[in-house]
Image 1 (cartoon, one colour):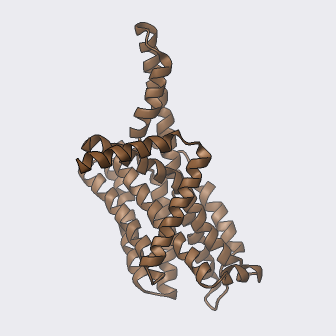
Image 2 (spheres, one colour):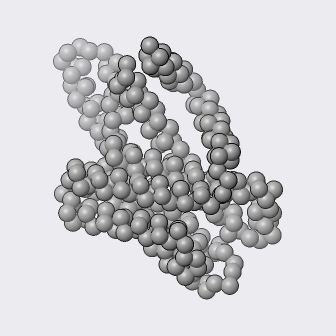
Image 3 (spheres, helix red, strand yellow):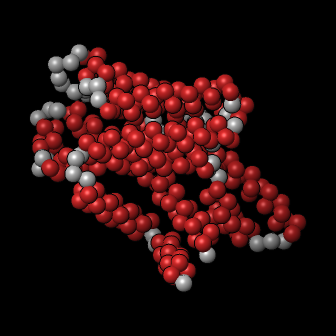
Length: 306
């Protein structure tokens, strides 16, 4: 009885959220994020644990992709360009990490880089026939060139060589936007499949006299939610959680220093602002996907246990 009652309340909550306007949903999302930050603040004392957890979750996401590639023998739904961008920023960060501060972050970055290179090799050679290049349309220079320009202008000031400082800034910028090709890939897949389903249902409407509005609604609310390949969805969600934890680190850093970091920005230390903005941008880029991922997860849970 308890389980059915909980599922009923969960279903009612889901339906209530669906009825709300987009503005209300955004406010609810912000409130949920603030509650999560408060919980992290209460239960996690050492801020460095956020970065370690972030990198560990990213590595776990890569392992999910490896599992998909080895068991499903398919790389459908996966953007090769996002993986290549990931390998580029990890290589740059690993070089800086070895020369500047070799620690647990270096080990995690090494594991993630090796795993990412394996994914790239598998997609390019072993599973090349399953890679849908037509959907992976974002040119790499759209992402790399702006990051290179920004890092040449804004980079940390320290006693380390200029090349190392620019490289560190470059990997920070590139990491913030490395997921964009993957999101574009999924958007293209959604448009491509939706167009095919609408064509099929239009033909069905003509010959069977079925309400077209009902069928289009069925497509958009039922079929589209299943278009993202499950393992790819798990991977992107892991990236979202990883970025949220990294963003939380900087939020607490600013809070604990009573805004000292922002004061340093006013003194000309724009590198600090670049790091903070990078984390915020990547978190917001992935926030929309994470919302629909959790929404779909709740729907599946209700279906399985009802």
